[in-house]
Image 1 (tube, rainbow, N blue to C red):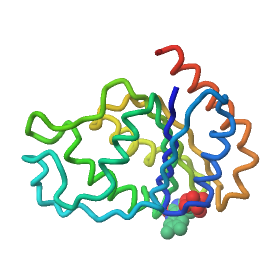
Image 2 (image 1 turned 180 degrees about the vertical axis):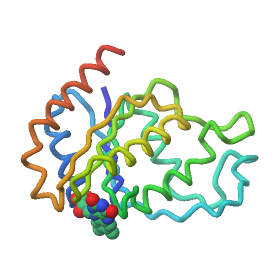
Image 3 (image 1 turned 90 degrees about the horizontal axis):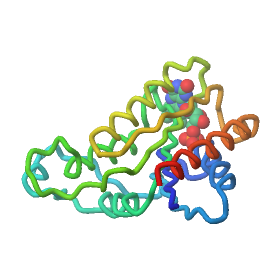
Image 4 (image 1 turned 30 degrees about the horizontal axis):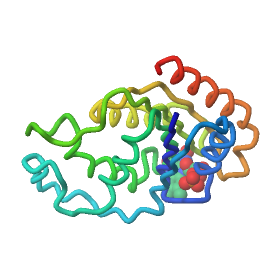
Length: 189
Ligand SMILES: Cc1cc2nc3c(=O)[nH]c(=O)nc-3n(C[C@H](O)[C@H](O)[C@H](O)COP(=O)(O)O)c2cc1C
């Protein structure tokens, strides 16, 4: 079993990373973990040129395809994403836009795609108290999954999270989710 822990925040050592650290520590020793933090990835915006519709690749190059290759080697992905202005952070939006060549929306055939069957779970967090904003983040993740051929397995909402010191009270819930998600994946294998 190989799991990708994907930090969609621009911050490599914030609350989002703390959530993924708890998930990583909850996974049994035999599970291989690959970690991506978008804050450490230089990402240029999509130009909207649509050349990728024909070519199946982005004119800007960069690391997006390499990250997807790593995702393709995993059985499951956990995307943790904070709310920035009631939405996903710009870095994550840029990443999603740059995935267009590999999505099912590109009209040309023969493009590279993720293999089918990889499951994706979402975790949304925010400082405010209402869960609707987190639900919106999860629906963005689910939408991304739908067009990338990932099987969306559901998600968690964490509210009242200002910084990483606010994550500890949620540790047991995160550990339970990690165990539940892992057993669901083992059931699929
Ligand atoms: C630029 C920016 C915008 C934010 N906008 C919101 C917001 O609209 N709603 C909210 O509840 N929290 C908002 N937050 C708070 C973050 O969701 C919260 O601090 C989260 O823990 C950040 O995780 P991170 O440190 O891993 O990036 C914002 C934080 C930043 C830096």
